[in-house]
Length: 339
Image (cartoon, rainbow, N blue to C red; front, top):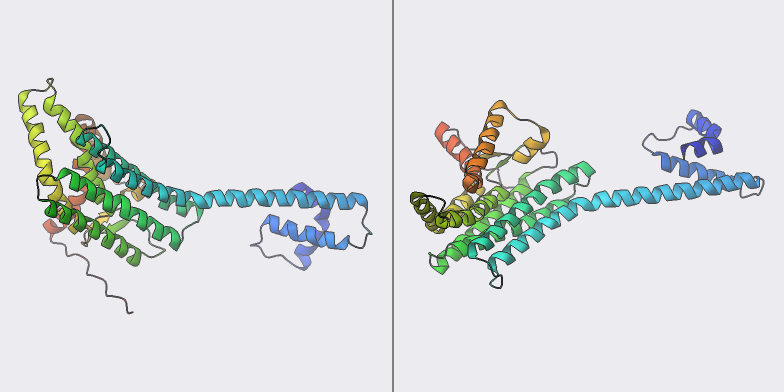
């Protein structure tokens, strides 16, 4: 296209740049289109040669084809963040369906395992959609609101369903209240994040436990349950390991509902939490963080069935414990905006 532009009206382009400069923000296609339109209007009187008119028609066709390809590429990039966000919602709905299904010929621990894995897949979608929106320049209020609605399903409702399915030792009303409390705190957390986060926020950290981390903590325990059930009955392990695994399975029915209550409080608190995915993408890692990552990798290979619960509990409870231990005051609540 650039060669055709120079062959058709290179001198005119130079003359315009010296006498009537074009705005620098105009791209090559728009400038070429304007020049082609001007040349076509000059040939309406019929004085131009047939070869000249044929070149102009060829230029218009090439420009139109190039613009169509550019618009299609821009549309594909624009729809990518939305597809990732909706993928998050699909994972949440699938996790709820698997956890509540009575038609699947699977053990309860296996259903909870699949539901926990689906929540983690939703976390991957949630981590990628924001980065994709920033990379493609498609950040919008619509995308932010859609992201919050999808998070409410995957990180609010799906973990509550897991709590209901695990905590069968409590009265039904108490289990229902714990799940509802967790979901309501997720909604409050998402609404507060939308209100308090500006467009120019660097996304380096959070005030309050992020809802994906809270949901991931519950999902991590659900993922570990099939391994615990296998260890409790596998003859390869000694008897004391069987007793520990059985005790852990029994304790999970009591620990996970209590854990959901504590996580619900941490989501509405003002404790400072780092943005792990943003640090991974930006590469801002300290020596201390590298050491922690190495210990986490080694621990994951040795104790793979408890690695995820330990890692998520460390992230959830580490900042509150450090803050309370050091006596550092929490940031004050922001003043309510005037109606």
